[in-house]
Image (cartoon, rainbow, N blue to C red; front, side):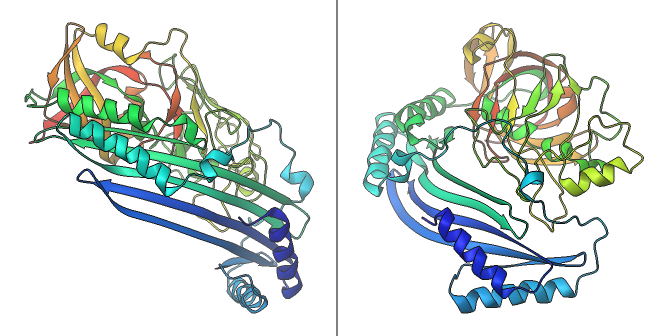
Length: 461
């Protein structure tokens, strides 16, 4: 693994090569391995190790990046020259700020738990294969076919600049994704954690198999508005479409659904959301793409959007804009992406706060007279960005609920649903958990029981 002192030495050598006013280096990379299986057989095992440095140079408001994964003297000289040549031909950016110093980068306002686990870093192909063997045995016992992955990684992120700021983060990650296939049905489960000990591939396989078996011979029922019970993965992939709108630049560009909606109640009173890098179920570094420490930010409180997050330059622009009195507190919050970028910033450590009276999915089912239980969603796209109307389809375990019981599997639905409306009609929620999906980054989210969810079409599978 690339160490912080090694990266500091590389940065020192880069600085000596540069004639720029300012220099910033982002380090990234690590080791990763993947075991892939299909048709009840492991068919691929791959591993790689790679590290890179992205060099940003600044000349009087002009800035650009160049990247290399070679750290010999000539390669560092070449990447500095490439960055400087690109920077010199850019148009000056009047909003570009000097790189932050150590004081502006800030001290950690909250300590994040360790996200590097030796047991994850040491995971071997044999151990992954053993876990896959258990998954396959469960599939065979239920006369199913399984496919999926078991991956592990150990990575680093670091930032150094010519004003003395330096940050370093190491993290491990493990992920299991399982699909169980029957002739006319399927089931799915996925989980990710920095600590592989938090993953139970066998338990995930049992749940995926149960969904495949119990949704066999699916019935076709008419589309329409139903009470739905969305498992956490479905909630994740729906709500994930909202959070890049919670950035200051999205407000300034008038591409956020929160334009003119900060302050009044927008969602149900039972919806409170924060960005919290220090939450024990979250992951990632405590600093952003400029090296500024991430703050805990209350985004939504009791259905009211309170504020958005900011990179340094966006906060400066917002203070001078027509929106300044309409968006809540304005200050850099440590949510910027590496410069230059067109996105500005975004909250990457989303945590839904626990409801006062959490319910399990089983309790949600038992309280439902007629509704649909949804395991996950896929192929989600925006129809109306301002009203946040999304379309997509259910997948891998969709069930009819009647009189408090799961009755049968049903053919999958297409939906057209406003996310704003959905979060205004949440009747029950579970305790939030770290959740993985396919359409969004991992978050800490609950399962939700939602009334009047709009299914528009029935599929043929």
